[in-house]
Image 1 (cartoon, rainbow, N blue to C red):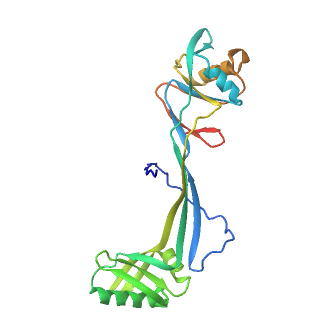
Image 2: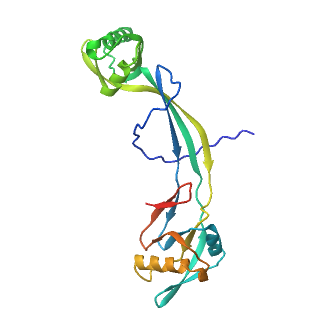
Image 3: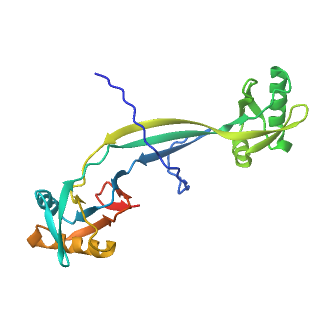
Length: 258
């Protein structure tokens, strides 16, 4: 049975830096790129909670078997409840992009002339090397949107125009067009995955009996002791009253806070 599903995910804007060229049989008239996008699993940690990650899975399993943990804080004690951590499903996919080396898109071409005449004027303008153009193979113009595309016979012209971002065309009077790259993209290898961190435990019901740093130290000391069913702690983060933070989980199980 074939099922369709939609997943909405917020993807932050990222600055992409060119690193190197991979050897491949690339077409002469386009540049091909591939980007792998992985949504990082996260968990919203609220006030009075803590995340603790142990070096060994078996220690986390031992702690989760306990109904509660009595943590000594100087002269006081508090009962902390351990919970298994549940993360929302995440996604991973590839974006394949093909950018034309010979064609560009343009827009903001005002309908100051009849459509056929405007098309001819634009083709003449894009053909002039003095304006940054070159020999035109084909030009499309849509009067209703003031946009179109132009394909040049040789590579290099399109790239220069895209870098400039503007093109001055003669349409009876000079008009400045916006020039944009022409590209196609495909979404491939879309995967969803979910899971639970095997070495991390959520601690709830933590009372603010002392300041944040001291309380976090007492929690770490308690859960490091084998007599408390604990073990070596890799990382711990406590959130005091009135605060919250987001913990991010990478595929190798190591957490980062923000």
